[in-house]
Amino acid sequence: MVHSSSNSLRLGVNIDHVATVRNARGGRYPDPLRAALLAENAGADGITAHLREDRRHITDKDIESLINGLRVPLNFEMAATKEMQDIALRHVPHAVCIVPEKREERTTEGGLEVAREENKIGDFIAPLREAGCRVSIFIAADERQIESAARIGAPVIELHTGAYCDAHAEGRVVDCEAELERLSEMSKYANELGLEVHAGHGLTFDCVKPIAAFPQLMELNIGHFLIGESIYIGLEAAIKKMRKLMNDARS
Image (cartoon, rainbow, N blue to C red; front, side):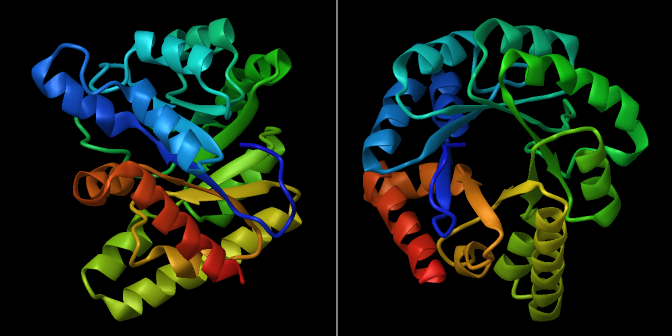
């Protein structure tokens, strides 16, 4: 999360799945920091990394390397646990994004339930904000969740775009249009409440432009697709193509 002009849309590149490939064999290759530096040089505005409880991809050592090696901001994705809070307070990354996490899930399946746990999450993010981290909450495009995020003092929300991306990929046109409309309306609503609005999850070259066109959005976080596409065309080319599509959507 970095400051930029109001019309520009930032790109955060998630490098988790570089670590997934590394961990399939063990050892040190491929190195997530090297990928992050390539992304930085290709024009990424920030790097996102999710340190999961089971350390299935990113590790504690990776977070330390990223904090020490990056010039662009690190967005540290984490569950609302004491262990992760301690790690964040030790490193004080530019941003922390609080996400739901279940051990059995392959990837983050939905947004954080803020409305039912408002006091708990409010208490959890308070020390992170006091330490100087910019706190983001990863939530569904839902009015109740957005209102709760605003009430607990989270300056940023990230809207979960997974349902839209799935509908688009599966050719479910009516569902796709409905999800897009919901994301658009909730982006406007969050903006009216004074929240900075980001979005991410499942975005590809084929479906990014309608989301990127929302004027209220300040940042997209994209990872799995870019890392996968880099196998074919290289990471730099994948990031530059995604950036061009985002820019075209805004022009």
